[in-house]
Length: 390
Image (cartoon, rainbow, N blue to C red; front, side):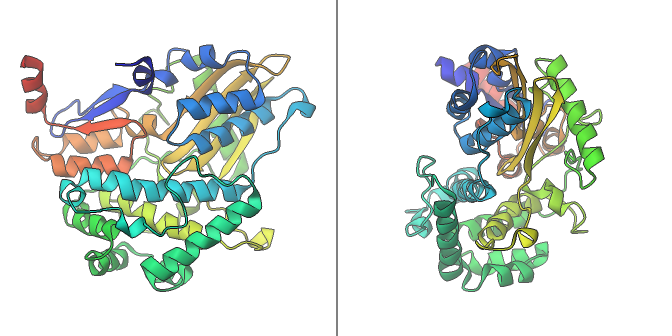
């Protein structure tokens, strides 16, 4: 196995056993990021992190810039923070990629279909991470084109109307059933609905962001301290003494919006609904009326030290940095959604343990819902035993 693969890591999920998640991502622990980034400044840090975390590179670059700017002791060295529309657009791209590439892989019957990506053929938003707009105007134009494509080709109505009509899980499930014959993401969600609508793991949300600025600042300060004091905290993080989950369903803006139960299916479908929510944002909206769809920001937590946050496709991303007196990286941590969601004692692990030992279909649905950004395989305890004796 290559050194790059060793750093990236992987996870194995096994239903019906006490220890249902095995694996980790070495790059976020053992001081590896400190050794890789020490002495770097500004855009060099962003580039390195983008190369290390390729699937969500745009979010890591954004979080890095926010953290570096907040910690920077020399104001003249601070770089311009990117406009929010770039984060919205790239998150929409990530959601489309997940639905187009990851969901079929978790449902073998769907991936066997001829040309499963045909529905995306005329999508104006390329699935390539290299095809990113470089200016705010280009991003707005791309987001507008995406909205028009979704309305014309997938929804047959304005995104705003669609969102109002399908706000509740039952209404969205009915829409998926109706569109399943012609739209692969709807078919995937319809198939999963029958399997996972009653699969409701206990929730423990990562409620670090808060509408109360003082509470949020205290929570971020606590996480920054944990990251600074323990070089391996980012590999097995805890919140309020236990594992926590993060994803599109845990956004700050959703905190008090619904009384519906959070099931495996609502976790899965949250990607589709957030895609439509992002696409519905229109340019030239007055600032006071612009929706706060994906929160991001940073706060100083010590001298030359800061923590940044960014809500991205897979959940809440956190970066912590310590700079030296010259503004160079002295230490660095990344706390990503995957480490929260795939914690060996977390929400997903407990849900997997309650499944029947051979229920790989439900385990695969849960894997898609919690959505690791590294390789993640589903197997059974029997299969692992057989492989170990092969």
